[in-house]
Length: 212
Image 1 (cartoon, one colour):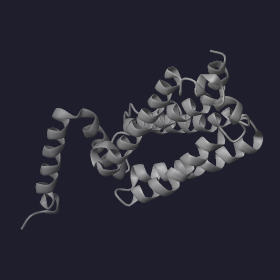
Image 2 (cartoon, rainbow, N blue to C red):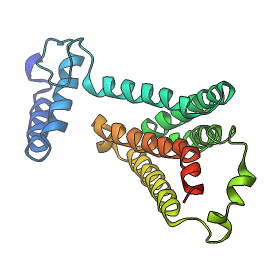
Image 3 (tube, rainbow, N blue to C red):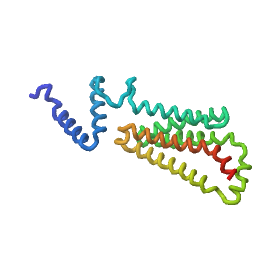
Image 4 (tube, helix red, strand yellow):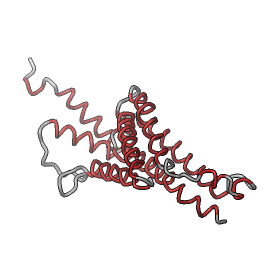
């Protein structure tokens, strides 16, 4: 009859063996798995290189910082009511995005509904106060030559960024391995952030185009 210490030894040995295998090709993943195991045992005084001076995990701190940047982007809108509309859309967007990133398959529904609707509201808020559409689009710069090449390149860059961010989000949703490292979530948020900033700057680019 086996002693209590030997009951789970096969599982223990298998765990260590698999952890060493993972460590040979992905040290960060092995470290995260080991840290989670230690935390489940109640061991928190470990040398965790992913924490900062306040004991906050770097990945989480960076995510919070990026969310603050999303909030600041609202001030690219031209009026206070549009800024409030931006914040309303931002709540929907971030809720849908985070659920889409972390809840496999089912989270994609929230990504499309909440995330998509929120992003539409966000982008619309940048143009709600742009009153002089007729003057802009009837300008010879547009009527004689179509969309200027520089603006067209700018718009293509924005669309490309959003497409890459969306594909990256879908992969993150379906891949357990991507979920293990917060760097992927950070990169996805940064892609969406850059895209939103570029769209928010468009109304400020039009006056320069009209003077060409």
